[in-house]
Length: 133
Image (spheres, rainbow, N blue to C red):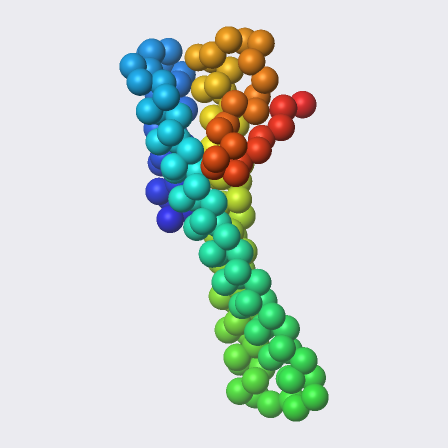
């Protein structure tokens, strides 16, 4: 999933850097918002999975402290080794979604009146992006 998001972002950036006009701006923005929603959902699911995985890892560590055994130690090491890729993947999703926000803001800025505030995302989608500093 992380690679798919990276390819999508790269494709968007290449298109926007090419300077080509977007024939259907509203359709493009709707599609981009739809993609943002998809990746937000994906990010949220991975947040829950990563969080629960971390809780299980800590629980095994606590049990291991009170009942030291080789199988528990091996389970703890296995969980710890698997937790690192979960966290890394969540990090990729989080940064990718943030990048999509910036791309959406760029589209709003570039193809709309320059004085239009950044909050050009329709309220119906529940996404609110503040101005970049």
